Every structure is written in C-alpha cells, then in structure tokens.
Image (cartoon, rainbow, N blue to C red; front, side, top):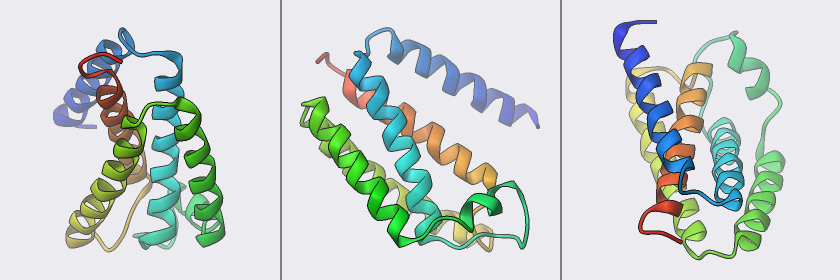
Length: 136
C-alpha cells in the first residue's frame, strides 16, 4: 500500500468517526446495508477483471436473483429507517455506482476486490454524511 492509499484510509476513518458522532443507530444500519447493496449491484452488473482473485470468489456467486434479493432487503431497511433522505441516498448511491463502474472500466478490464472494498467504504461514508448532514 502506498502513501496515498494510507492517506485515503485515514481520511475515510476520520470522516466516518465524525459522522458517527451525530448518527442515529438506524443511520449506521442504513449505511452498512447500502454499502453491501452497492457490492452486490457492482458484482451483478459489471465484469470481473481477472480470472482469479479474492473478489472473484464472491463475483461468481452473485447474479440478478441476488441483486433482486439485496434490493428488496435494502428497500425494507430504507422504509423502516423512516427518513426520506434514505431513498435519495440510495438513488445517489446507484447513480454513483454507475459512474464509478464506467470510470473503472475505462482503466481496468473489470472490477477487482479492491474496487469492491472502495465502493462499499465510500458508499457508507456518503450515506452517513447524507443522513447526518443538517441534523435529523
């Protein structure tokens, strides 16, 4: 891992720490669920970059039925959260995933485990900030 990777990791942790100071429990659950939904969606929609790798094991097990199940579960959590921001943030996460996926595919032949991890972490940060920005 290089210096920029370490810096990015530290910044993500600091932003999460700051957001968690204001987050309700339901916000934390929503961030985790939408972060995992992005993983499932990216595996169902985008190709994997290599014939093997740690992320390949998960990629091989995910398709459209798993994406549908993950989407229904995420919808249930967003509905139970009871904050309309959750729907907007889920939509924003889906749009961001589309843009990030296209950006990655211009540089790599597909997704990797590292890309999956980055997508999940950034989605969690995005949702936590969105749910706590300006109070509940």
